[in-house]
Image (cartoon, rainbow, N blue to C red; front, side, top):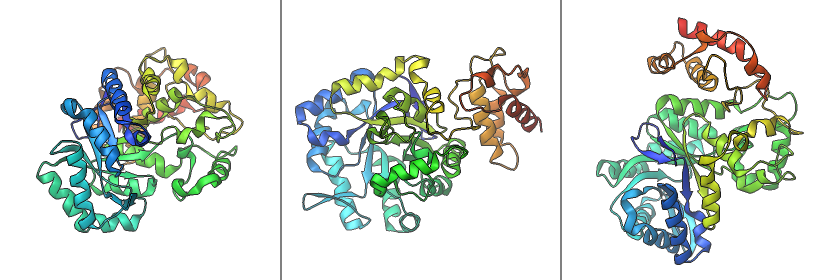
Length: 388
């Protein structure tokens, strides 16, 4: 298992994480079996947004004897009322629900305290400027939570949070299909109509990742706001060619690789029904380049939209001059967001063994790029950018 820094939190999380939601339909014994399998595979981050007391207890009991090896991503604002999940900002409900989470996990602290499910800008503003955030901040000051996070499906709200300085990390929806959707589309309520949105945004001639989503990833990378990923498989829609917006099916390995190549992303939270699914997901770590190659599949699909835009997939390698082209492009994209190149990005760029100045414009990379990115042109632009 490989591990990544979660933004500027100082936490090192496994690339594959455990999204515990599906444990609601399994027994305590089955939950413990999945947890042991995750531990054996090196998974060390667990997300629990569920307010169902039985799920919390099953997960808490399963990790009780190995609590110190787990990074718990627990949600604040997810409550249980009359046998049903409820999202609330009412502190009188939020506090006992969070205390219940701690009790059922047999712990006095969690590493990541997540402000739960913020998809509306007004909701975000009211949270940040009201008693909810004051409560979360008090939890951090007292050491009950290590870092403040937030979960969101809305790129515009997530971007606002990343820029606010109030949030240290995000749980966000990331997959190659959702990245094509404009920020105005409500992923959770779109239902069957989401196929229409996909089709409209995959038409030939439209270009790639929605700008707000692209900016979100870059801002997170630049400001040290770590991202853990939810809905990496789009609910399984991407595995079926008939349901996939691209008209072709992707594999779990391809979806994982796509998410893990986004700037700022540290871990993908995967829901597991059984041990076999744990093994399938962690198989990513030993997968071949061909198995990870989402780029060729999308580029050859009947419907696609990633044309002329670098997705940092690494398909352009190997470079005869040994330039890490994907990293150079990623750093250039981060630098272009500013009036002048930030010193931190410049230092990272200059620390590369080879950079854009070493490009000999042979064009080999362009011949391999599935999305027809003008790599040599970008290398020259980047050389000039960082020479200033």
